[in-house]
Amino acid sequence: MKGPFGFFIHPLNYNDLYRVMPELVNKRPDFIEGILKWIDPFVAAEIELKTKTNDTVFGMFIVIPLLAKQFIEDEKLAVSKLIKASNLAIKLGTKILGLGAFTSIVGRAGLTLVNLFKERLYFTSGASYTVASSLEVVDYNLNQMNLNKKDLVVSVIGATGAIGKAISNLIYRDYKKIYLVARNKSRLNALKNEITINDPYFNKENILITNNISEATKVSDVVIVATSSPNELINVNDLKYNSIVCDISMPHNVSKEVIEKRKDVIVIEGGIIRLPSIPTFRKLFNNISFEDIIGYPKNNVLACMAETIILTAENIKENYSIGRNIDSNKIIKIKELADKHGFSVENVFLKK
Picture 1 (cartoon, rainbow, N blue to C red):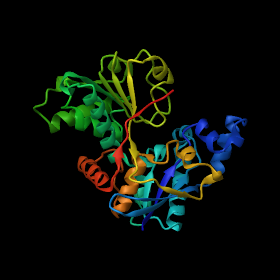
Picture 2: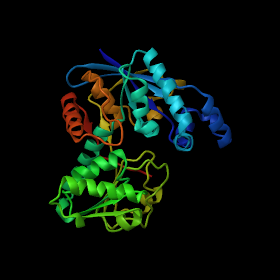
Picture 3: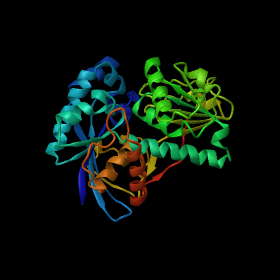
Picture 4: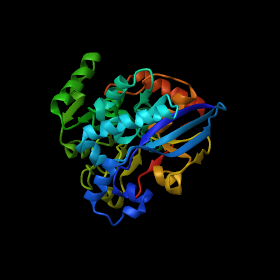
């Protein structure tokens, strides 16, 4: 048996929390957030599954008891919880740790943990497989519609983050034009300069930068959303007719109103992976289902989780997808390993 691995999870919002702890439904938000600050990390579930290569992989999902907004508002508290969770993981015998959701954003995008736990633990944000799988599902939908990327305009929202930057570097040549969208104009300029320096013959006029989301999305045929914002950023009037949106962000940045009212728009959930076999779960928190803990059917996981499982199956002990610069070679490699072990991309449409 390979493992155990550890994977950090946390409730994104109050609805996530109520799903696993219904006793909190009628409590005041400030009371709930105060309680969460004092709860130590704990194991919410154990998972065991077999890959296509007949490797059995075992791991644990470790809860960091903070909401997404708390990671943003109090990074010092969030990092202290991650350190506690990492020490718990060591006691449980893990060597490979996946950083899910907002746990991969704080602490210099994982580098703080890497430096603190050198050679005792190896970390990944799972961003490499998130990038690979999200681009694969976009390409699948474009092919289904017989669309040629060279005729299309694409926007990357959150282009200066780890995932957005990697995607931008991989796709800028594929489309007619690319909009790089983020809040920080200086980082956007740096990204554009990086692309044009590395590819001096590329027409820099085909790369446009803006910090105005709707300016880009209203003229884009394809929109890829990869921000670290917990808020809805794309609204019903922000999208071009018949456009395709791939929302990788957790929680999703596409508003519910878009799903309800824009029937012309295809909204895909990026980075959803089908496991190679139906997993077995044990020690489920509060005796609730794994589907309720994770929010997906038990044969589906997020790409960041899948990457952690794949690295464990391969016994790769290195800090894989860490920091804000993702190695394109690692993106290619994790896709190859995913195929080898029978992991596949799911085409999931966002629902109301």
